[in-house]
Image (cartoon, rainbow, N blue to C red; front, side):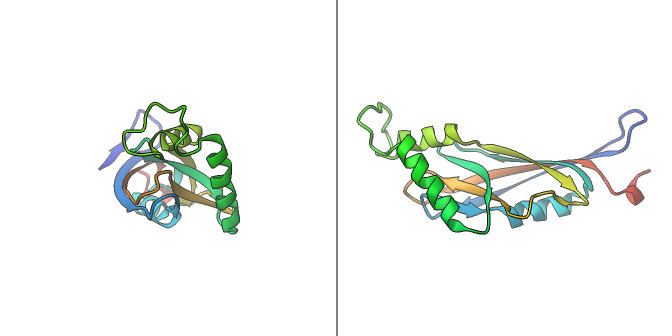
Length: 158
């Protein structure tokens, strides 16, 4: 879905929204940086923001170190301590021992990220990547919605 608007005397604003599905391998991270970057480049936005939203409550999105995978393993260790699978104190275990722990892990992290867009690209730092963090043990299909809003390049403005 693409929307082009001309609000009053201000610059033209573009809003583009695209969704995609990610098949996870079970608990762990999946790098979404390239796919989200593709959506941003295709949007025609030169300067603005990119919102990435995950439509699930047992997985999350994180902006994380992309050079050393031990960072992600250590984060998994930390969350395993904060929200362990199969804790007998949990009442919600409808889908198994990782059910409530996965929801808790999602709440402790986030299901959306906002990243600046500059020069038609994600304005990420050198060591930053966008990751889907699956909190369930089993593989799942996860739906991601990317919304890009901002101004087109100078030469494309009316």
